[in-house]
Length: 167
Length: 120
Image (cartoon, rainbow over all chains, first blue to last red; front, top):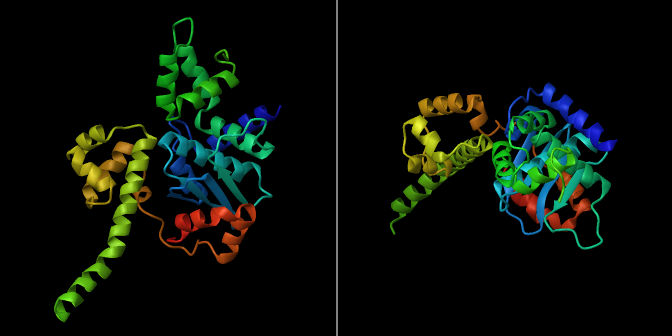
């Protein structure tokens, strides 16, 4: 399955770059990769990636929330590692119109980003520590804080991993 | 305004511009590393032995941080001191051809790309 392939790839990268703690230090990883991350406000765009000489430039819209910016950096990492034949990516802020679906590459980059900043093994062990019989909103919120992601992103990730039930 | 006064002002502006940029860049980096670790400004300032306002001024690039405080920050964050600084220019910058590649994805993203990367 595709998502499993991406999970595995992310786990290998975490080992390679010595990522052992959450929140995942994405800026440090960018430095390790020789990726230059720059920020500027934009009405239309959330992120962009441009490859150059085995390295890359990432642009992030800093008018968005810090958790969203983190996710976008990780999403651009996704393009960097997964879509090596394409040199430039431009990612948009706007929500999808009805009937519109994200392209395969965008969905893959989203999967990569979620796996990258909410590592599966960490989440599984965190969920095990929760003693109450059901996972409550307050617990999702505290996990979101711990991983420095939005509540929505955390909820979606937990559902995808089968750690909580979808609504 | 007298000629000599004007000259003095110009000199100060020229000398101070790069400093302001480096200070701003170090400040932003400190904020980002702190936020990456979900630590409050209050708590970090306390550990540094400065006020929260002083830390905010540093993060906004208004005030300089000294070498001792920078070393302490690296200890608090568990990072390298070099991480606070912008990269030493190494010629890794965008060329016209690079901007063209972005334009091929979406022409309307060009202005934003210039805002992002022109100063590198």
